Each structure stands twice: as C-alpha cells, then as structure tokens.
Length: 148
Image (cartoon, rainbow, N blue to C red):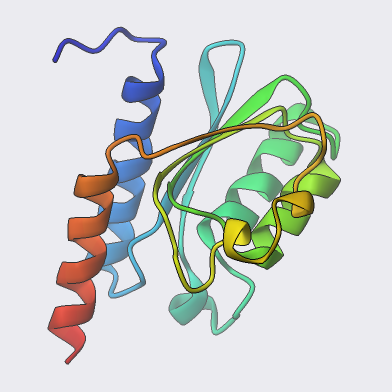
C-alpha cells in the first residue's frame, strides 16, 4: 500500500511509532499524534509508569503538547490519531478540547469510550476506527504477554 504524505494511513503510522517508543520504555504501548493543516503538531505516548501518574495517557500528553503548540486550549480543525480507542477520561478531555476528528486503530472492548457512551465526545467530533488495528493490537498483545 502506498501512503501519501497527508493520508490517515501516514499519520497513523506515526502514532504507531509513538506506541513502539512506549513499548520500549515498558509502558503500555499506546501512541498518539495530533495533526493540524496536514502537519503533525504534537506527538506522545503513554508515560504513566515513568511519571507515576495514572492520567499520563498518550492522548492526555498529546492534547497538552498540541494546545501548547497552538497557544490555546481548543483543538478545532485538528485530528487525533491514536493507536487504541480512547478511554472515558481521554474521551472527556477530547470533548473539552473540541477536537474535530479522532482516528483510532484498535478498539478497547473493556475501557474504550464507545463501550460506555458515544456521547462522551463533542457532538461535532468525527470518529474513524479500525485503521491499522491489527498492528496496534499485536503490539498490545505482545506487551501484555511479556508481562505474564
């Protein structure tokens, strides 16, 4: 598959690179990037172990970095690419950021926002799921098998 530089596939591959960084740091391998005007403005991965902070999910880290880059708390006209479906906390943060679009790879059938309520997202936020779900899922499965 050929990836164009501004495609969802290209940006999800970048989020997968962030997930790999988390894996190598012995963090749950979730990675995220935020794109504005076809450009990555923020990158992050889970840092809950390193920061000893249960809220240091990849999405929370990337929201903060993107808001800092833009100089404001709202992420309108931005897209979040994340390798795992956001949890309720991260979905709530996405609501408050007013992010325009979320693209996620693997579904989280236990903790994902869609299990609880799709109303957790801002009403104008578009969602696309399943992009590179196998790759993201394999990284997560490998991580947790290593832990056992």
